Length: 316
Image (cartoon, rainbow, N blue to C red; front, side, top):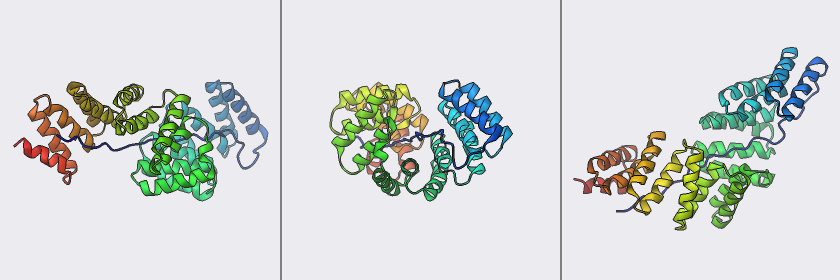
């Protein structure tokens, strides 16, 4: 029985490196003093104090857009992305030409699973500064996440020309790996993803992307190790579970495959691959009813899928 090939879902974004720039003009006076105190506290890692002083700066001058921006960054870095979004909104409202604010707002929308909203604000960032490698890279991420792979690849190629490959850290390596993969340089992509993992062992996206490439090369043992760690680090990534389920299917570990695929469709009920592979895991355990139910779900989501249709016909 044929197992469907696996798709690829990449989610990546980069926080701008220069988050503490003074902005477009000097506010001066008390607000500047309070802002500088907040920045000093933030640089020292005293985030609660930084928040307090940034809010004081805003109270002194409600147009202090860099204070809003840094508050957004602090909340986002702690995982409070909804709050970060509100602060970044205030930053760009206070200064509608603040490219960094739009880029950060777009990145936060990506983190909260709103790629279409991310595209809109990141297009504004790129319109304001077409040479911003960070804004262009984040726009590519949002486009890819929203399903517009053609424009996403175009933006990544543009980002590369602007120097996005020089972005330090694992996020830049993931972006580079994705671009190389799309250009057909699989070995280069593998090297980039390995570099991302080396820079940040907790980068689950790099592990998932590398795991998929290794699956395609038949290196199932390493792929399994990468994917098991990836879902341990991020249990909410459906494609990580789908890909891990595929490895288990290849190794005839039917129970583990069923568990991984059920987790995948729990996270993303619209995953055709998840339902299809769940059917395979079930049928190989003699669970005909469960297999039929899974394949019917897959067929409803994608009626044109010939493999799923044939599998259902065999059960009649």
